[in-house]
Image (cartoon, rainbow, N blue to C red):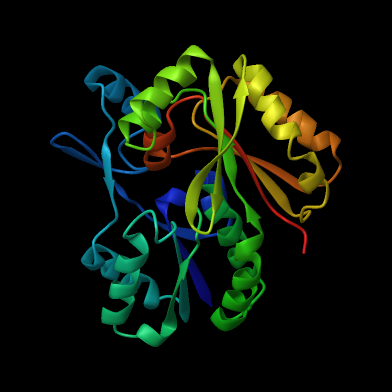
Length: 283
């Protein structure tokens, strides 16, 4: 049996984690002197309130190799092999720490660590595919081979409502934030080659710019792999989420349209009102 493990930045819901029997390694969220575990004892809404009050964003950190090693040893008692997914190695030390833990464990040859080169449910898409294969009895080598084929096909992007959190986190200059706020600009952020890149800028109300962002992907969505598409958000009005889901459903492409809420690590960088549509492109 292959056990699938992922760090908490995969942003999978508790229901999906249970359904696919996935072990989550939580990252840390540090708010001044307080340290919290992503998805365990801090919510994004609590984080947003703290950030607005303090006028800064929390810092985030990967679990230590020792903490990861403990989880690996627990799972190796029950599973034949482990496959571990992390956020892009260019964004966090999670991948490096997992590799160090794998080298130190009692059976390093039974642990495969995969750099997703992505974030949020861009990772989640790969994690679920691996879990499906594991459930069908595939071994780690077969799963890794398939994931390496799929990894460059993941299409992960999102559009942000406010530039404040990107600015506080050092990913947007003060001038860009000021100009963006005045002009009501909402940038599309795309993940490519393991890093985030700014894309098209949208204007107008949330309902307007979110739907424009989604419809700009229509050609790619129509040729995407059918299994699933994610709508992942950091606290958007339900009406907008429903509208996006309805639009995706109208395309008649996807077997599943999954909605998840971004965790505290991802939310700390993008802020409230962010929404992404994430899928795997057709081969």
